[in-house]
Length: 547
Image 1 (cartoon, one colour):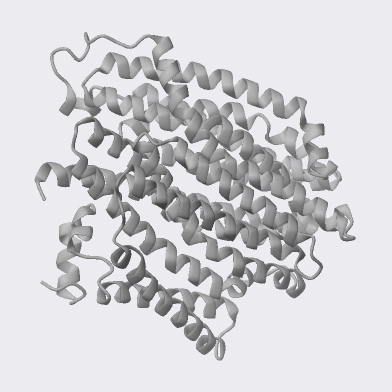
Image 2 (cartoon, helix red, strand yellow):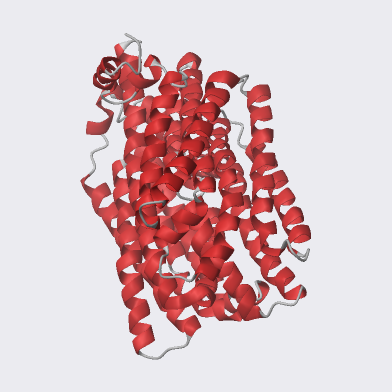
């Protein structure tokens, strides 16, 4: 591997590691937030909170899913050509677009809050929708800067802003909820106070990004691309830039927001179908709150290890394609798929087999009845983690290869399968809430399979089945079985908390050894990581990799 290629790969994986660390911190803060919040609000209050949050996510995805990626692609391409004037102009145009989109999105949410609450059959979510609506405006402005930084393959400002958002949600959300309870406000209003903490946290993250951008030197961070004409090259007009941003962003936005929209429609189906089989609105909200508080956050935790790969890979592949180095692009794609598989498969199986102990560990203050309702749902839902991880990476690969419309087809088909299966299954007595995680499983399975078909036909890339999937699967089965064994043995002596931690730690250790013994990862993969040479020497010393 040449020094230049290795340097670029190290830069890519450095960005991945920064975002991964930030996402782990953000998700950990999110879990810490949900634990006391669920104690304060209960299942019904969390139902209102999570319902409003899911509506917000739809607006958030529509407003910000595609444009930051489009900005990063255009910035990355202009920067690779050394056209610094154009790079700066792209940012200015993007900021104006995001300003308009954010203002429109916030206005729609605030003016339509009552209608949206009625559509999901939860009138109590009205105040929560109002409380979170301004977040759209703040996150749009923040996304313009994040897209700009992504084009420079600089993930640190994005990571720091995300942590600030999460801390604001944790600290202020809890304080606001306690204040509202002390004032004697109704449960829907208390939930709205708690969700306002997220709004203030996003505002803090946005302010940080603007300060960071003020001190950022694009010249210093593009020294290897600069030439005599860097500040005198012709620049695309604002109409051309806007057109390219929109053309690139729309397919990405549709494919990304389809699943969020499906989740919101799923919310409408869950509440409506449960009420159709005899549940009250309050009980339907409580069951939805149980599912979205205990199961969905844990389901969303493992993919934080994979999303940074998808997020970082787009500008890297785009730059490689722009420079005509297809070999480098395909090598990166294969590595990304392999690493995503190594992370996703054990996460899915481990979370499934330890679903009840993990919920009991994190939400110990809740009754056995509440935990008993959530654990089987998580056990099913966790299996979708693998397909969600693969979907994330393949979406990014297709988008980077200018095949943006194909993930749309996959996501529409997946969303259709989800809605149909959820509608049918939730209305069946005895199945009811189990229909929600089953529908999610079929959804991601369908979309992932279609993406791999498109990857083979349009990108001419077929992953090595054995190395990418079979070997990690074998190691993951060993990992899951060891987790069960460690937990049962430890539970004979210790309580649930220590037994769960021992089971997780033991399973991780077994898995790390297994992936090397089965050769699911090799020297080239290790060498690509930052400080990979030093890590490789250590692994050879302990005989996990042959010299």
